[in-house]
Amino acid sequence: MNELDIPARKSNIELEYDLNEPPQKVWRAVSTPELRENWLPSKALADRNAISVTPGEEVRYRLRDDEPPFLESTVTFKIAPNASGGTSLRIIHELDDVRLRRTAKAAANDNGFSVMRAA
Image (tube, rainbow, N blue to C red; front, side, top):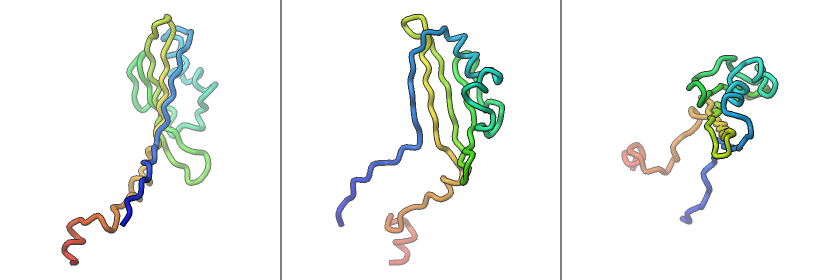
């Protein structure tokens, strides 16, 4: 058999931005619901509350698609001061839906114990 070179499918997107604004201002924009609503509407969230918060550094939200199959994902905002006095903002969006984990199956020819018993 020939080995197929199939690249692994990535389930996350990472973006990095250097902003001129101070970290405190960026933190307010990503963590205060009234300000966050301007660029991340509550209807996109699976839950209006953050799933984890490290004050001034990191906040994570659970998102849900608004169309079937309504997959869920996690978006993390990491904030740190940058060398120019502004803010380094890193956004990590991970597709992590329980339904996708359930459908992952081992290959039929993985030479696992059940295949060896059947031989």
